[in-house]
Length: 70
Image (tube, rainbow, N blue to C red; front, side, top):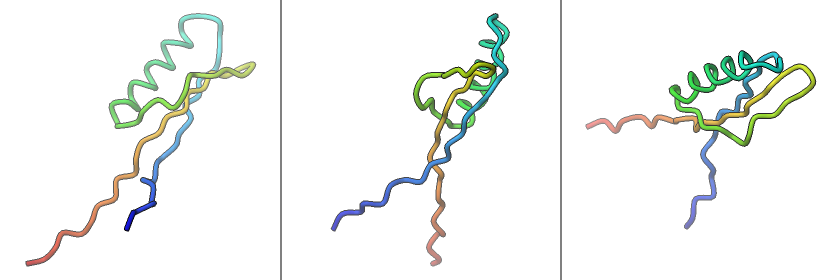
């Protein structure tokens, strides 16, 4: 018997206002690093809109099983 259940994940998109200077990249790097420390992983490359820079990230949702009683 196989278990076809996939691990549930949390999916977030970080966003910072986009300006054509290093401050945008520094702010995005700070936010990404905070999430990496919290267990998230990058999901694809950063992407831009006209006014914003985005980065998608995911992490598994850890489900805890109750401990067996003795």
